[in-house]
Image 1 (cartoon, rainbow, N blue to C red):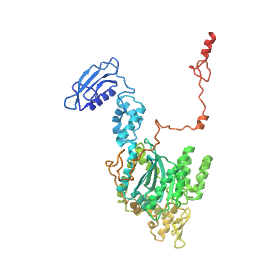
Image 2: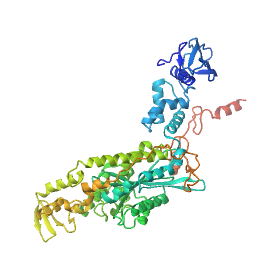
Image 3: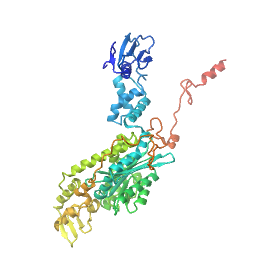
Length: 586
């Protein structure tokens, strides 16, 4: 059937196979079918074009399911020009065409479907039909959105059963149990964060694009090598101040349950007021900073100037107030408006030199890196998004456990590299000892005061990064101290291995979970059927740009011109000049 031709006596496994073949032939050869009779034992159709003699008849053979072509009459005289909106190119046919592609790429766009069908069959189908086919195909492969919500309680039970100590809970609203929120934090993530990661938490969210929308909220950290370490995540029906307060409340409970001494944390986010207020309330002793990536993207978008972004980063990483003020002055010289705009973010919230907490050199969160894990899954049911994160977590934990087994240094590779650079620079310095803990370190350009008791240097590099700077290394080597002993534990290989010490265990397949519509067991009082949120994605393609009301009002209106009377304010078709002229003549 590669050339889509039929011959008398040709056989097909069953009626469904024959119907698919005739439909495929009609689409590929660009003619429309008019089905005269079609049931389980016979099929009779002809070309839909008026006057075209082509006809085909097929029947079922006795005692078997095989279908055979019994007669084939005439040849096409219709020109076979059915190329636009082919009737046989139904949604079901498009689903069968794209199914394999959807399995390999859930981000397969409707416009790509249109392109591929046109390239392979030479026909054009409506965009809406491609969009519907994609929706139906995703549901066939991954299950419906409604089923995804219904399975959440069972999925949470499976997480807690296979990964003891994990937190997984669904929250509903209303008498009909509409989904409201979901919080998940695997025990491996909680243990690893508290025992081996930097005490830094990045917060952020990303919009989901499935039928019922929603937002994925997440909390991430950094391991000893600076890598992404997901701590917790959740899905909410709507992102607002209340949902962030809830998310951080759940995070606080998860951490406090697993430690007696809560570490001094630093939170990084986009500066959203709802997040800041929630951090202050749930983690009152923590520090809070604005993510530099978000800040630089905002100033770049606002003023369309890459030099401003460069200067902002220089100011943020400045280790002295003099250097910071120099860069801020340069920003004001490039754009006074940008300098004024920046005043809404106090330097104590983003500049390294003024920040009161400890960020170990991390001025930006790694939330965007975590969001990339689910970018292609955002259109899938919510349970598929969670499964994608779980699978990625399992793989990352296993890979990093194996990778760290080949490390023989004291510090993780990125920290070890920084230490070696400091040792190499330190060889050129002269050290003067003041007392047991204080030293003056002289270099050709400057002199710095180092205190090994307080782990500080006047260059502020040691305090800001948690690893001895070159001046501190020179002082430590001069008094025969081990430089590695003065480095924060969270940068060691031992700390890295501790972060990934607990494995993320697999979760069984869906078989055996409670399905959509099944009544909960009589003895299970906590069992519930979770229904999707009431809010659904609106039909049609989303607007790419929202029109501001002020812009709409201030926008100049297009002036129409009449080609008949050369006047403005109307078209030729609505021109009254001819009508008035006729009346006058009458």
